Image (cartoon, rainbow, N blue to C red; front, side, top):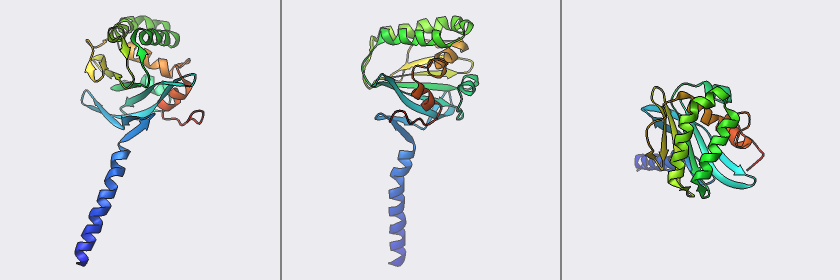
Length: 201
């Protein structure tokens, strides 16, 4: 009996530990769950950080950045040549044309002129994807995966949208929207870099 009791206690302890392990595998941001790891082109990536894009006090979307290793400065992230993923989930309905225009404006405001010019093909393609979608509804998502030697792949709700954007400058220019000198949201910039900020809770 004593041995059975010990086994029962051990099994109970394992059962209690399982939910904790499961919780540790995701990070929740505004009700959106981000896995702490992802795979892009066969490469395992880790969640570098995730946060919320605010417009005044309105929550617009959440964003999560996946890298091959954790990095905490914009310079290090932009210089990283490995696989990457940016994953965005809408927290409200967003007009597709407006989203494309905002991305274009954000890239142009933050990217060096030469980099932006080399990214024009990608800028037009991603704007076309959003225009065709017409609206990114609340709860819908899109990702941009950077694959070395291939380019940037756009996925809308997990499905590939068109051919890869081959210019390597595009993903760097895209990331400058959130990590550049004039980021879309300062708090989100810190969150993507894994830096805690007390301004918003």
